[in-house]
Length: 291
Ligand SMILES: [Zn+2]
Image 1 (cartoon, rainbow, N blue to C red):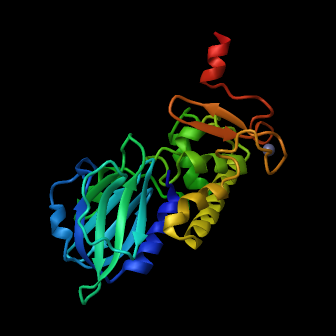
Image 2 (spheres, rainbow, N blue to C red; image 1 turned 135 degrees about the vertical axis):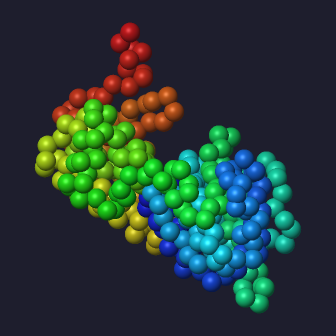
Image 3 (cartoon, rainbow, N blue to C red; image 1 turned 120 degrees about the horizontal axis):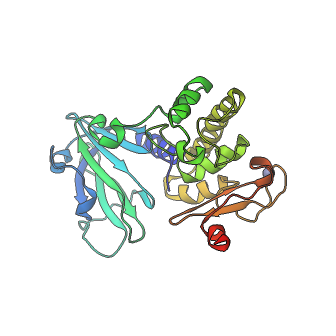
């Protein structure tokens, strides 16, 4: 589940390694992943890659000719870069390959293949060929970027989210852009705030602590991800998380066993001592027991 740090790292890595190369082929294997029809995706071939940027959790690749390829990796999408460029065109199959971009040098020599892959059966990765990144609805509706927040801006955004649980509010891309399920666990733990606290109910000092935690956690993670090769970034991300996915492990701050809340489609983790004054948070399993 790539979030701001991983997408940021992908953007800088792709810019460093591919900028200036020409796109020789854009092969789409999973047709349903392409969400736009105009301009036609076939128009990208032949254009030169200028660089990549990040909008929330969207990755936007800019090409000459005024076109952009915007990619959303969703839950299980990833980009793999190889300089062993396959000679045969990509074909639909059972594998995870969703699309392939083949980049060549000015002399036409194959340089890199960039594969968009997606594991699992629930496909969510999306591609958009647009004239401007803001033509993508998910980008147009983004809130301020998580790395641009200060305490005042954050407090304003979260008060606007009303009584929503803070865990949900900071993952809502319309409220703040870039944070997902994993880093919200790390951030709330760093700020010692309960995931179930109401978004509009924090004190001024807590909003300030939360703003600091957001920037510190995401900046550290982005630095870590950028130091890794994109093909190994998934493993790298996991190793940087200390709360998310660590049910039962000792909290790195106080040593309490990290607790889990299981929801229908995902789970998340928190430290009862650091975040909830020792109280367990209700989840589906607990409400079943209570009935
Ligand atoms: Zn703790």
